[in-house]
Length: 258
Image 1 (tube, rainbow, N blue to C red):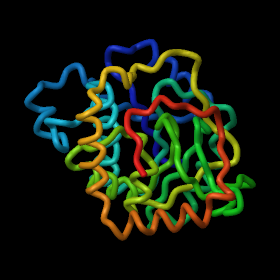
Image 2 (image 1 turned 60 degrees about the vertical axis):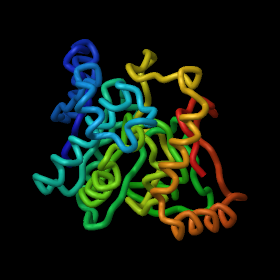
Image 3 (image 1 turned 90 degrees about the vertical axis):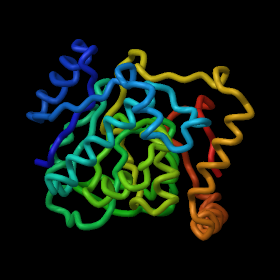
């Protein structure tokens, strides 16, 4: 069985008990990580952010991103080849153990991310990347949410490098993929769903100054090398007719790239 991590804040014991009970259903023994953005000092936030004067991440988004990055750092430090990462509002729709065991026996020397939820995810319908334990994975194109995914050590290391300094929320998978952080896969079945409760992270576009937003979008886009942006545009032209979407469409995004 591969390593399991859970993200939970100390101030949310009820959510912790809920996710631990969910994991116990399938004999998963997770290690808990959690960084509360409310506890971070202004000086600390200024020191870790990319372009802190115009950075538009909320404290909740910063804490969430740092929680995921702490897991990646743990994987790199302890040389953990592959891991399941869950946020504390996750619920299993299927028994994950056959998939986890199958992935544990796969080569893990490449950089891969496997999205296990269908929250407004897009994929290339004619591009099946692999089949694992009778489950088909497609080439993912984009995905919202970071509540359930499997990640290899090399992918974790690449995201750590890209997110130093901290640029975007933890679920900007498309931006990470465009910047060659990993191979991107999405499962045909929604292995993990979300509980019917409010997320602890929310940011309204109404709270953002339009001028600063435009400046920040430009600043982050410029971090993607030109040749990778060109490569993405060619892929977009090639795959557009075959793009499909899981989950409802959502306009609630902090920023929009490409």
